[in-house]
Image (cartoon, rainbow, N blue to C red; front, side, top):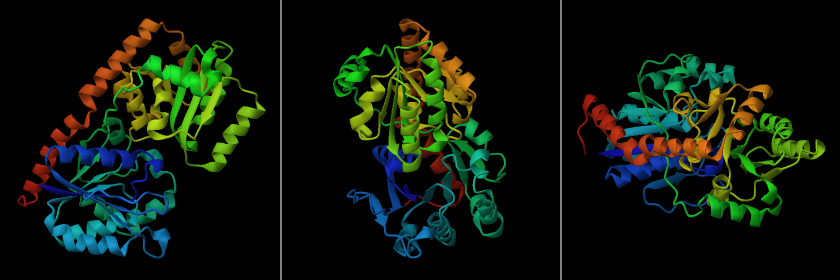
Length: 388
């Protein structure tokens, strides 16, 4: 079986979809599935050296997000694949590939990565509505063999678009990191790197992109009030720069309001910053919209209780006893944080153990791709294609 994956960008600074696509393909290849990845090259990204990952330059006009070189490659090679797996929905290069697959009678599937969610569709509504109904986007979406949603909640929250293809759940998985910094060592690293954290009894962390949609300002406001009840609590905001104006606004806000016990980090990233998550006690994500947060799964894999907004689509996991789900109001967030921080160490560790077990049982790529391979085989068989 040969599967061709396509995503606009593999820049990990752009969010979760690239990390998901790369993890999925790595897991498929370990199962001896021939999986290749195509993407567009960004000027700031490193050149790719893996033989299974091909990058292509953008064509003029850049704003369209198309690549003539990419289209030439797909036209020449698509017949050597059984299936095309698209990651994303709105990028023009994806729809160029769909046209080529259709002409060559190659089935294709889509992972929307939260982009079909009702809250996402309402943003740039007129542009998306025009693409759906006056271009060829809806037709392309409806010709997909399967739409893979990351969770039941994401699928249910994507009902506005009302598409025809079969819907299935393909959870976001994790590539488990070696626990080279267990909690005690990670806390020592934190105190050494940032001495001001030494007096903190409990640590709350936001770990992700610095973006307005992530609810970081609400977290800061809620934390400011929470200090009245838990004065020895600290907040780490560790993120990938994504919006320079918003980042400067948050830093200025913290400074002007003289909010204590906040560490704002954007210099340490990736593996170099992971000890910050490991040294923390509670992970918080107050997103306005989310497909399925990879950073939340990473926190759970490290045994961290989580506090997430209802828009994070983690309700089914929260119900298993790994944290709290909150509304996007300051009083709700403060109340929820106070509840978690008032728990005993024993109860927090119980939550953490449950969290680790859930991730190991449900969100390891090794187990996820076993089911996906069966889905791939069924799609290919039903499409009348034979394995190459």
